[in-house]
Image (cartoon, rainbow, N blue to C red):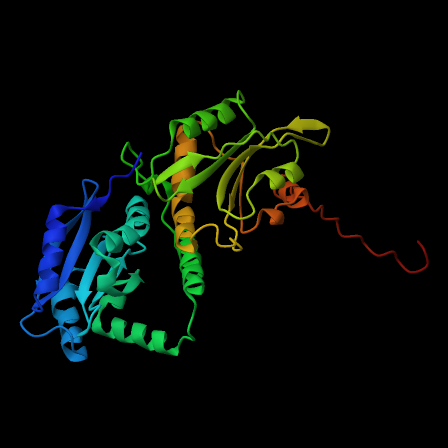
Length: 339
């Protein structure tokens, strides 16, 4: 099931107007009713291509529309020659988590739907200061100072940034997942989570993001690992995964079966998955855990690593059963003479 997010007819029409009219400086875009819709056209009384006019237009036309807690897509005319446009995804840290996930995961759709050939650059901004004339100047300075990076290196940096933003996001209670969540989860995946929760199904549930259908899917697996070593062998070493595992083991003479959650995002993809697609995983991690919780599955411990090989029985047991260091009382020194 697709998320249904696409460019509305109104957006396509206004975007074409922007392409034709040099007096149109920019276009502000929102997501409404699962469509990319225009909310404001920025019209300049002067040209938009020169550095001075661009800076002036940013401060006078764009800045008043930037809000501290509201995500926004921004299309700006910046260059005299083609491609003349820059696409900005503004996702402030204080925006609702679901909105952050939705805007970040749909930003490539915006450029693709309108035609990537029209955009010279895409920018991801998280603060209002970045969207001032001084902010763009700093961005340009960093771009000139940075050593030339390959597309893969740039994308890896975006993945790390997305992971940091997801980890520093607001609390889980701000995630509002309904029937129109950004990435729906298949019924077979929900059934597997319910089975693991009630201990009536397989002790292993692995999930992946399908970037084409924009869904969270169950990874088919006949594996039913009985140890951490077996689990590591079952997790893909080349693609990201969300893994729920019932770890049955003996500790201090009694059997325990905690539910563990592993988020793995290998850096060595070997070209099998587009690196930009990996950005979806850190953004969707909270949503996956929220859905699992609604199905009655609340992991006892959560682990986050790049490579599955980093998961070891020793590290898992040390998290589940931390050693208690017993402090010894102060031993009074013996008196001279042995008495």
